[in-house]
Amino acid sequence: MKYLSHEKAINHVNNILGEDVSKEFEKQLSVAGEHGDRNFFVGNSKGKEIEVGVEWDKEADQLTYFIHE
Image 1 (spheres, rainbow, N blue to C red):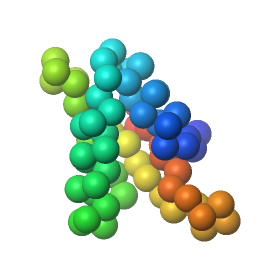
Image 2 (cartoon, rainbow, N blue to C red):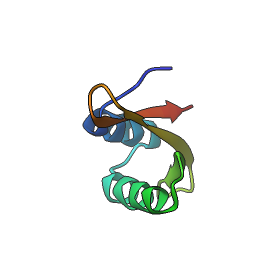
Image 3 (spheres, rainbow, N blue to C red):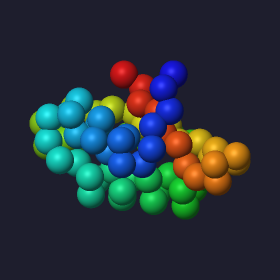
Image 4 (tube, rainbow, N blue to C red):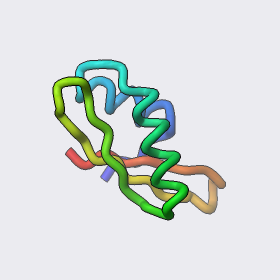
């Protein structure tokens, strides 16, 4: 499993879904954070969805992301 930075995760999801879903990514990340969820789904306008996981990297003191393809 490859861990990605926030920016790289958004770019990867955009590439997979074929459109800019940055706002949806941020919205779903916020909802997941509010509920303590480690995974969330991001979808495009055609109904295709992808699951994104998020973990706290304690050593780097930042969130890291992974994409479930």
